[in-house]
Length: 325
Image 1 (cartoon, one colour):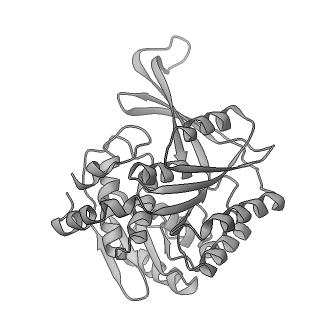
Image 2 (cartoon, rainbow, N blue to C red):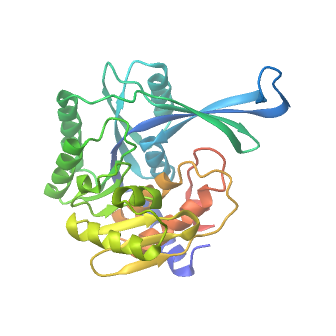
């Protein structure tokens, strides 16, 4: 549970949350779950047979970031790509049901929304099948539309989030221009990266790689904390990143900036499903920074929230009662 000070701070700002407006730009993913029971092995091959009970669709990727914020009452704007494929149509229907999400989709004829299909028994993932276009590249004409949509809405918003799942929307050129626009309008910008070249995110206010992404970006071969901190300091200084937050699963989080190193312990819970925990972290940090909470307070709250959602099945998000309970 959060400490009394943070719970009190949240309660005092409950009404202010509904006054916030946050833009999220990023890759949306359709999370598809097929749930059933394994009753026998296949006579055709040494594999389990899943007797299907039901299936469901959830908004994943950047969509899960905005759902986390919208569930807490934040007015969000989601800028993303959509196509003419079946997955894109399902995403539109799901987003239209969300009352606090301003759905800003950029139609791209040759784009296909990535779909992740998970086969699940009793919250245990048996298999995941990904359906996506590996070589998709966004043309400049559509990048200009993304920037125009951002400029049209940025003045009315408090903060910008980049949710990068490396699915074709956010390339080096577009990220750089979005950061420049955010700085021009004096808006804080948070980036959750999937790219190994972290220089792309130069000048952001907070960058949130997980430990594996950090290791891939810096060629660290071991989990040595000292090397992780040393590499983090190097990235902060070289790329002018105000705050580098490394999420480390059961090892908690590391916040690295020019002035200090802060460690945040994990909140151990029964792990049912880690899907979307990183989205929760980014969403909660965004909300708390928009409320003018300190970085440490924002991260402490987001750390707690992530510990809660991994106890839920599927692509989960929290409400206010979950947060203070």
